[in-house]
Length: 248
Image (cartoon, rainbow, N blue to C red; front, side, top):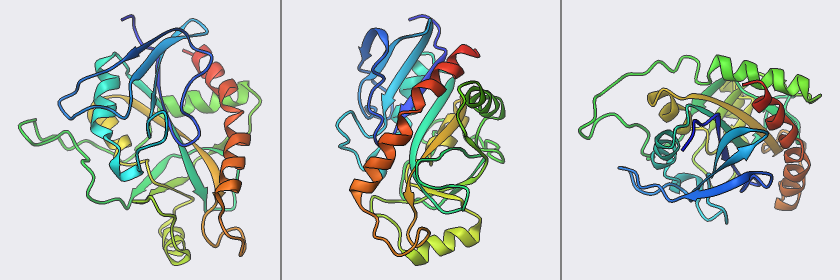
């Protein structure tokens, strides 16, 4: 397989890259079990791209059931060294309304019980520096791509990763806000840390699907609203990806 320019991990609402050419599906075996689904490879605007649906193509895996180690290992084994993660999130901060596309720069992990490291179990124990959990160079390229594509990306913000799959209580969101979180999602960790352990440049575009509990008034969070916002926001992703690939 030729060199890979970018791997994309699709979250809720992003289950495939429809415009890929020369498409192949790779059923990858890893030391950590199978990834969420087959890894799809193809060519987009002359660039070699990998795509993996984080929840599976039919959205069958809850956030705590995802084999994050298998996913990152599979992408790395196929040659990926840059990873763009697409994550569906709730907005907490006032800069993060529904349908916003956000490029966070910080992360707080509230998850538990997930296989979260390659270290140990016979592997070398390495203590990677995660002071800045998202790769600075890839973030900058992503923000530049947004400007090129005429998209209004939100630069910066702290992603709070919760266990899921339920949505959070209002009290939990108040706690996250007090901790400094601007966004809340369920899949940001351990993905970012595992990418760092493998030496992969990793950045996130967070798609705001709804206001987090209590942040948008008293309205109930409905799946109809979530899916409607995701459809509107993800329609802007192809232009962003095109501009990002053109920059490599």
